[in-house]
Figure 1 (cartoon, one colour):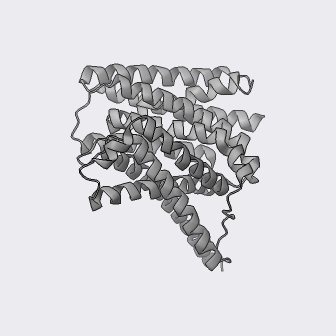
Figure 2 (cartoon, one colour):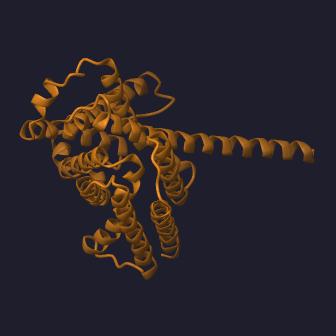
Length: 326
């Protein structure tokens, strides 16, 4: 009797850990693949010098993905649900401020990836934690603890060392780094605006994703005209290449999917475990990038990555303890 119970318990534990492992692996795969796909689209062999067009198309794919999932949910209502996708002008207006921040975030993110190496990409965008703390204090008026400030100082130190070592190696891009810092700022700002706007869609993250991407598709059109991307796209030599459109579509699908698997990973683990997983994924992505692009890095360059990763992990742990105490 005891043996049977032990076997059943072990079987359930194995199944549970197997499910968690598959979710984490899916998150890693989608996140890392998305970075490499976007890098190829922005500065690869068949890249187009129109980052806003690339981002616009990926937002369009996200909108279409919402409609596709909504159709499937109606066919199988017992399996999963998806919110109604009727466009409400009032909600569109309410979500608009978030959408402006959102398109700034993803555009700057892609511009950063266009100009920096994939191996430096994580460090180049590592200041989002620092901006989170600053915006929490200056916008929300919440005080910051000394341990949190210490973690931010560690991240800043790692960022500075990483920039210095990237410059020493000869692959430093000032423009890409500036885009990375600005992208980090808008990542933090996006989190604040998301919390403010969520009540407009009754707290439904899928509805917010839909409206956000609809607004983005509209807002990108005049931006592409103003920045002269339309002639670039029209004259692009690989515009009819199946490989180009395949990568564009994969980027859009994975860009949409990353939001879902991020939420799923938090659900099956915890926010702290998600942060640890994200940090470990960034380390794996950096190592993979140096191997894929056959880059040789110095000890101090690797140290800068370890400092940023360590500071980020420490911050996640400090925040968890603070939330628990409060």
